[in-house]
Image (cartoon, rainbow, N blue to C red; front, side):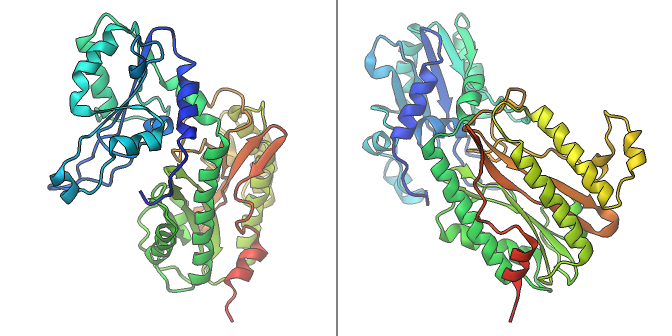
Length: 430
């Protein structure tokens, strides 16, 4: 790992809060992610399962965490099963956790090699009535791949059909959506690294550079500041490419007169930042580009003020849509009379602003959390309105990461330039 160590107290507290939600006589299992094959004998870079990391801080493949608060054997109430290393693994793959290192990272006192798991698993299951399984319950998730947690769950049910099986997902959705001070510290580091990359790009960009050169500047700044890399595939979309919401080709020349939409964020200690900025290739916006840009900025600022305890995503998105309608009318893109007659279930603004304004952010860029419950202090949301005008070859989206507090909100990206005057000033060349 490139990132600096995180104090184990974070993970001890996370486990304590999770265990308090379990039914009496329960055992809960959390597997690491699969090592995903790429081609030939190579794998994709390993990325730890966010739930396992949240509860243990262990950032290594072939790991299993067990939490069983009522187990009659005290040493088995928390267990880390880890891959046993050897001289060959050390030569070919590098260092793996020792038992002492795993204890220092996680605070879990019982560390057992995973090849010794079967005997312990039998004891755990014999003394538990309820088994909590950790399936992917992110409501954006849909996959045909039988991932590691699913395979583990199916095998456990096959061998132990008489147990009562429960879901860890709803518990973790609630716990992970409320960020502790230590988590916010890690997220702020990811955000600060993202800011450095953006400022680097402002100084670099000029007519004739390519989108992939800008992407290269970003990853350079990420890695030199201990980030793992991108929190998600970066979007570097010049001109009309900005109207493709998930544009990832990043292979075009940036031309004088165009605006570049850049959506990127660093991942640090497995925590994500998520930033979107739009900058003029020439260093100066045209009057029309500035007009559209400022309309989006006004919506972002208005929407940010609505990220408060007690609001709901559903009500919030309706209110943001009303703000966007007014801006689109002002830009001459919508007609006030037509808007008054529109089908409320198919608002006209969606022609130019077709995606949601906010999503949870944390260990995943689209983090888990219940979108249908009221917002609470401690949650972090993105705020990312946009206006997309294909006929003008222009797409503008602006995005900051917002912490909800007991008395409002805190913009975690307030230091990152966003005003037209700031951007033009920082891009000005002698």
